[in-house]
Length: 110
Image (cartoon, rainbow, N blue to C red; front, side):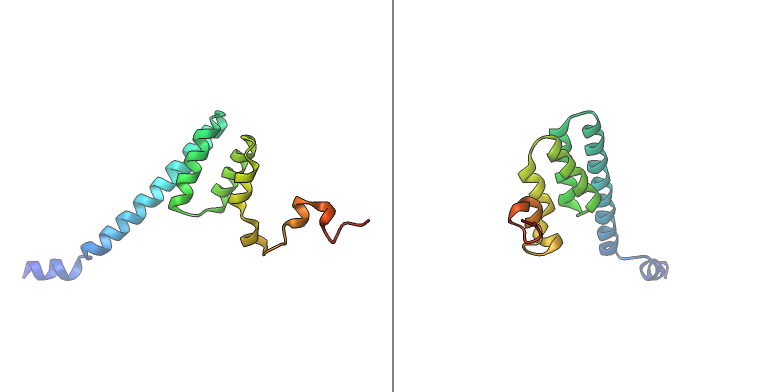
């Protein structure tokens, strides 16, 4: 009879495994993110970029993307920074063109 109550009132092992994986992913994301911040403060930009990219592979986060773009800009890797921002997804196709080349923009007064 005790086995019945144990199986009835306890959660399933499958749900526990999924919850544990979620906690582990959240913990690893935070570790990589804050290791990247510390590395960037110590001017270890290459290691910071690796940490931010690993954190973003776990969970997409705007703040971490911002840190990654800042690290790329500090390291003079502007193309990679633009790839992270992916302006077509953020603003729609073609909406970022006037920032890249202001003289070709329809807003440029001649």
